[in-house]
Length: 112
Image (cartoon, rainbow, N blue to C red; front, side):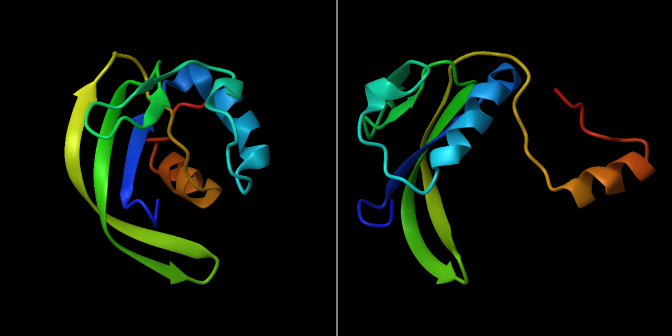
């Protein structure tokens, strides 16, 4: 992402939680073969970047700036395109302390 200064972000359906969390085991390893993913992909509109075919929405961003802070890299991007591919409940991941905060206020996120 930092080198090509482009990224396609997929909004994943909540029903794909198990598949997505399983992929996290390999998140520090570069993907060698897009066809090895456990779901189909399709090309994003402007950049032709493989995106999850079952995505609810795909946004393509041009990376304007990136900065390493500790063990993380932060990116600033400009939206180039946005496509709505399907409807449904979106997968969200939040920190445990945030869910506790929401529960105390009777507004917890639904857990799948």
